[in-house]
Each structure stands twice: as C-alpha cells, then as structure tokens.
Image: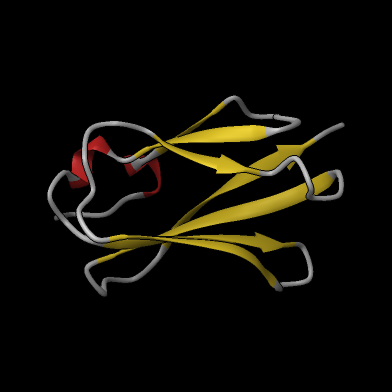
Length: 88
C-alpha cells in the first residue's frame, strides 16, 4: 500500500462531537488511529484489526476545543496524518 497524506479523509472537519474517518483504501489491513493534541500528547487511540470500507467514528465531544492531529498507522508503516479542528 502506497501511503500519502490524502489516503484517508475526515468528516466533518471542523467538528464538535464526532468525526468519521474514511479508510477504504486500506480495506483488509490492520491499523491504529491516534488523536494527538497540539502539545503532542496522545488523547485517544483506536486499534482496528481489519479495516473495512465503512467509516470509523471517533468521539471527540469531551475534548477541549482546539487543533488536533489524527494519525493513521497501517500495518506498521510510517504514520500519515491530518489536522482536525474541534469547536464547541
């Protein structure tokens, strides 16, 4: 799998309570989704044994408003990331 920044998408962005993470290009692989704040602290992690074409829902309602980064690490490859804005 050739990973590039655009290989997954987030919706809605900005968000206030949840974000849907679309990983269909990684169908059948295993991976980890990490939510990291601006200070580099891991705020949430979702481990997926077998990625499907269905989007994954991540709840961010309890997160303070601000800028976050969602990183995707698939099958041990280098992580790719996208910015996520949480606004309440």
